Image 1: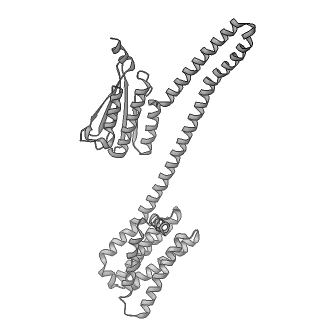
Image 2: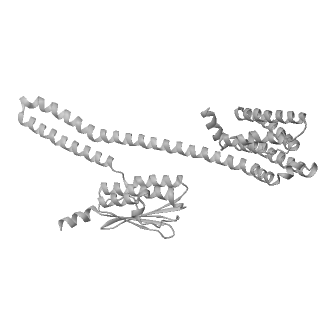
Length: 378
């Protein structure tokens, strides 16, 4: 039952309990008539409509047109006979949820023609008293019949595209992981693999020379020790590099995020930095990622620029957007991660400044590793 209710909500955009009103309302109009025959006819039409409505949801191909045509006929009959036009709203929701573009256009046009013709005939030709008394609701229903199918169809199409975008991002993420695994495998083979092979060969040679030529055996052992130290250093360097995130890689991910959010991206300067330490570069990358998340979630911006400047003393990064801006101080914006960015930068002797005028500009400054080293020497 829960799954059925959830599926109904996804297909119509409304809770099933809202539709209960429309289930009950037709009987109010039917019971206004004094004729028993008309009452029975009205009940049969209501039951027939809802049976066809359910069948149209679970049918495929030409049966969708068939059941929908019967619903249109019943809606027209209910409107002219009892002044109940709200079955057209059911059809509007259903047609808007059609995934086939051709079926949507055909049934939408038929729905508009039938609705307008029925209301015109009821007002002008037969002067239906019930329709006249509920004129404001008729106008609202007519507007809903025009707008609901289009808005629902576009929303469903947007949801499909969003799902495809998420799937594409997942595939990209998997490909990036696969490429990273392959890179690690190549690095291990090119560095550690060759060194271990060399150590194995020299160890075998030294074991053979122990008795024949002890002096040469000691030289081989020294080579084994030297090669082992080199291999250990290369492994440590490789692990250190894996732990950090290059600023260039972070800028690439930022570009993808902004593209998915339909925000124009501009990069000024080169993301390849060599003057700061790997830890500092990793911190700057995390701060840029946090800043871009804020731009996407809170700024309502249409464009974003990242400016990277490298001088002899520091690395300067500016993240600029044309959004709504912020007015509170950094200390009051813990929820947006700005305080966390400031604390991370303080760890590498960096600073964060925020200026909000016709948008927001975040300025990140990190001193160069060479300048810090020269200051210590002085």
